[in-house]
Image (cartoon, rainbow, N blue to C red; front, side):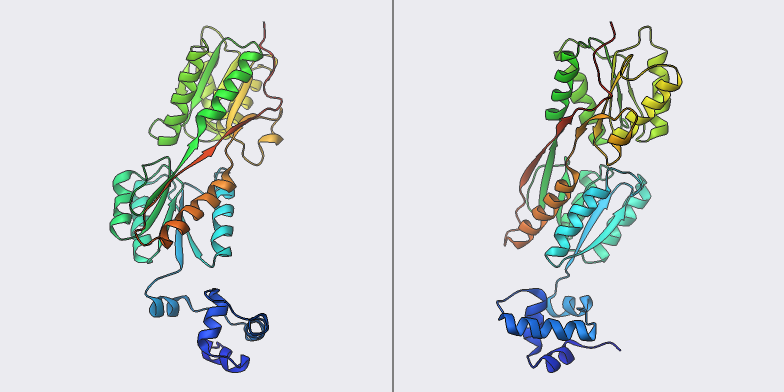
Length: 333
């Protein structure tokens, strides 16, 4: 049997308004009254009716979270951070993945608008500024990652990849490395382009003009395929920087299959510090992106913006850092 808020109120000996205040934590309620209401809620297995809330307040309590693909180990920690923070503040979350498909991305935009979400966290490079304008035009708050400056209904989180990348370059220079290669992420991916530029410019400043510099899709197989350009180069570099941990692990597999030892012959550096990077053999030296914190920060940015009368967004920054493991070692002389 489905119970109404009125029935919960009757059994708890309070008004429906008090039940609403207890469940939504919008006013101070005495501990005794709160315990009595929550006990009845549990007994009746009562849950708030989201649609009724929309009708009564004119607003939903739904947020959207857009990622590229749930199978990519980069995203679960972002989801966990965002979802936990949202649920703690009594928001529901609609999770969408683009699968890197333009048609699917457009369908997701329409779905978000039709679902009457209050705000959306865009944690993928699949959307561009024009597409996010559609969300803002619909009055939906937006927080993006490395996409656009803040403004009305828009906040932005800048992931400072340069900090961790410079730490990684200084690390390999101290190990005696003087020749490097780069396997970056997809050419048309905004984040991959940012990482590629930071790697190439940082290496050049240290006198390590990287060669070859290639781009590939995110994935273990793609990383393995990209190694062929490195193996066919006139001189084997002593260190390879990869645009993600998945690319790095694919590169490690292909190099070892070709008889190249890691790190005795070639050192490998990844980016992200996904959950199983330390399980690679050897464990992967990588640049950590604190992704659970990124998810939390995305929610906090949305929540703060939606509480402001002018809905003015803000700019936020998240640092990266080098995590040294055993895939880097002294350069082979």
